[in-house]
Image (cartoon, rainbow, N blue to C red; front, side, top):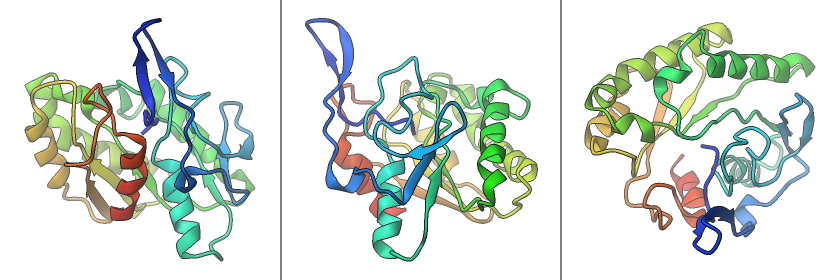
Length: 219
């Protein structure tokens, strides 16, 4: 969810670099804001998570094309406020209620509402790290559903729309088990977008830039 579109390994320096290519679908828009790491509203632009997922190289993600697609479909929608919270490489257990990442996400979201905003949806693209262990993959459905229920409760939005991605790749061998859990989510108002078949970066883990904005068409 933090966005790795356009991020590749520079073999000369052995560092990850972003190519800085921002397609039209991902361009900045005065009607799209983001809550930055200092809890201030600023105009959103790629990389959306630059000051949030600070230990990794960020590139194009799904947040900007998703927001632009909404405004293209309905120009009267108004201002969209994005609250980026993703940290790449994390296990679902690191997002359970009471954890640092969970508490930070709730804190940032509640701060975003202070100006009179309304939570419209949660975008959830996660799970690659949970494919390393068979146990984690098998428990992903249960743990993610518990996470969604807890988050809805703490944000006091019982039917918060959740758009999650059924992953196209992962860091371990148990992708089919985890994908099955994602596709069989039993909660109401949860929609799953299948990323299977979308092109990947050379690391065979992250979606390419075109895949990031093409996946929005299915959301």
